[in-house]
Length: 58
Image (cartoon, rainbow, N blue to C red; front, side, top):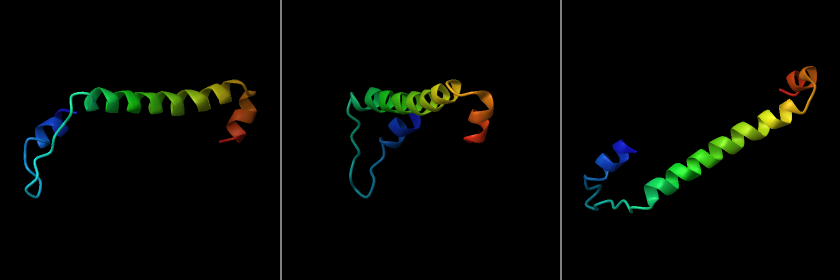
């Protein structure tokens, strides 16, 4: 995020990028939600199976 904020200080093809104050926490929240969903969902599915079935499903 720091690199994006620093990079937004420089014009790109003559256009100055603008970072809105709510976009940083929104992007972080969406990234965390996606990471949790795609990490917890398969783990919960595998935990409900017998170990040998979980290994075969990979």
